[in-house]
Length: 339
Image (cartoon, rainbow, N blue to C red):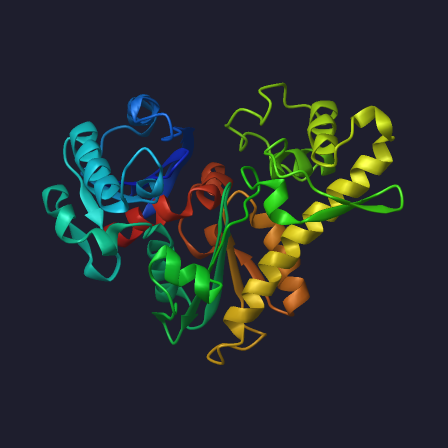
């Protein structure tokens, strides 16, 4: 049996996917915030290795090099490549169009390695579909990547280029800042400008609305208090300079819907921009992944596009289907390396 494990080192999560003879059998994500250093990442690697088991090959991609633990993206790439090789024993580092490189050669390919996890997914989808729009709504960001004539057709590659092209949107299901989602919100018949403090996150919005999947919010809340609807209402109210007791539940549900709609519009607008490049048409199927994959179905409806989930394109154990959607880059890496 040929076993490949794909690894995706993010700024706050480590994701892993195990592939056995071309079939994904297991996938999981682990909390590993890098802002306070790499200690939690080391713990996450140890936990993941126990759960994922042995492998004939380990393939690593990353976005964590952007964490402010590192003085530069180059330092982050080199540090994380070295750390992954040490923790996994042996590993290859994914460098996008340049293929896989040895960890000791990562310094020669920093621009290709940095934040290339989206490219792994797009490269795999290009083998499965002639034309498609891949949208991965994660905890912090949303990737929007066109596939045209079985090729990755992104206009940007670096984070900066992708932000400019609308192919990277800094909005996520969990860690997205509420004040970055909208500048004001309606409250009791008045537009209230938001307080520019991180009193609440989009996890609070989706928790109030019941659209936050189980087991995806691995980070502490903005105020360190509990993850309940009541506590989320209190945090969201604070963004508007209020207390939750100033209004009833229905009011805070309406406010949460406002922020969810603002997030949906941001993603839909960016997808429209990407489609407007002219190579794809509005009927292009959307392939959805990430912890927010279910929300992408609404984006597809608004754009008049067919919709399917990432896991529907690949061989995967039934019990791992949702986890694979949550860890799509890790799974894509392992599958690309198994082919």
